[in-house]
Image (cartoon, rainbow, N blue to C red; front, top):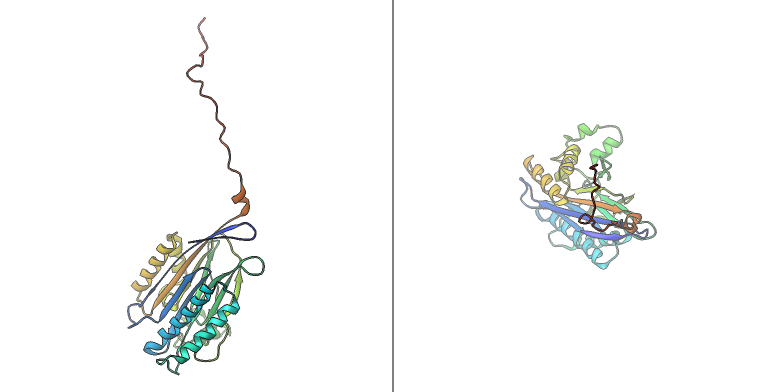
Length: 278
């Protein structure tokens, strides 16, 4: 949990939980995640038995270093990704054929004016936002099927079983660095973010994600419920997710005076009951 006081005087309380699981069919876990204020990200590695683990773990490690350095901006993230790519390329178990990782998540940007959430995305891991009772996908997949959907050549329903459904078009890896896509979001009371690898979305629909959020007010309970459901539904891939809750209290509520309770002396023992007799 983290409490942040904004320049406006508003107070933002953040609560979060995260988990990762190998799943039911994979021999190893190529996912990794970081949930440390102000950065919350998931990485889904790919590329051979060890390559995916190397890519996701080095990417998360470099981003963790950036958090510890004390400043998270788009520039700091891209510098961390450039360092991660060098790590991946230099690792003795890295292959030239497809070693890389997705990366997606959000960070709270407190620089230059009003604080705001910034989502970032490379690949097909996703950020969802539950706001005002509606669940929306914040990020756009970098995948072959998403390009076909955008071009109008494929429907979202057809995409689920498409033979290229696992083929992504952008990744953090040994190739030239590509910056993430960014999107800014207001810091709003009651928001709930779900940051996840496709191991979750392969097993749960958007409706299923919203259902488990509605049933579990605590982030740790929501994570546990969605993880259990994904594994029960097949667990065909590694599964990783973070749930991040936002409570924003206005400055006016922080400064509101506490109502005083007015008290009166107890006169019950000396009160006189009027004589009604005649």
